[in-house]
Image (cartoon, rainbow, N blue to C red; front, side, top):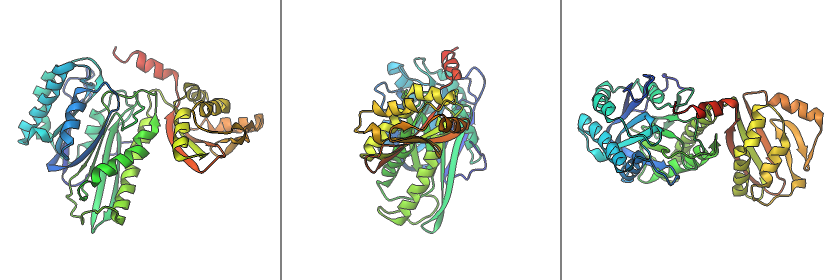
Length: 399
């Protein structure tokens, strides 16, 4: 969960405020700003319905530089046509004018209700205020301003010694529903003061995304507004990280840790969720097959409801692997909940083991391991349980 004591990378400031977009009066607008244009890489939604701010930001960061990100929650500015795109550009223009920077260096991100025009008066009245508020002690506020149905703000950081300097990585994310990204997550912004050689930032981000935000699901819904940006100021003074170097390996490990922890926070905070479950597939014919099987189990509504009911219904898990479309021999399958064996050679181990496994399911976090016994392939996926509250939250989302 968010901790305001996390170290902030050199060269970045932030601010957050309540602009009136949310009727509750909670924080709903934020700004992240670098002292100068910095290297930037991004990944974006794979949904064919793409929100206006995503279209704008993807175009702008394709040039590899960014200086500011203006964020709002409560309104997605999605399915809003040409007006939505003009409004997104206008939001960026307001920031650029207030900070006296080029508009093409301003990214725009939105999250919230789809199909409703942005209330532009909220931006007219508060962007300049945000710019005056900028400081290095307000990133917790940014994490809170990004929230929609989130139960808690999501922040994570790492500090490592690299290239003769102390390097800091700080990540912020939001997401609790419409989580099945296949690219990134709802919104994620990661900042570092490391200096990397040209072209490395995008590769590092994509690799980390594939091991984190692409390994979580809550409800199999991919948002129209998914966006993950990685910004590097180079302000730490480290020796530039080179391709293929030990320093790059160390940086990537730290980045992976930050992004995986953020991804797990999102899955843990799934709307109405009470459990975070790691689905671990072993013994598959390939890593690709293992990932397909893990995703099949993680997205099964029957599996997720069994988790909520604390029912060690291993048959639902085996069935989900079976319809995943990969090569497997059911007679070779074994399955366990944490370290409690439930299935060996495709057969259940009886009611006594099931009773022990049911105790595992009472925990808020556990692992289901399925070994297919047919190869060396392995993969993981994180999911949450599916509770009554998920239906309640989404039935009343716009009311």
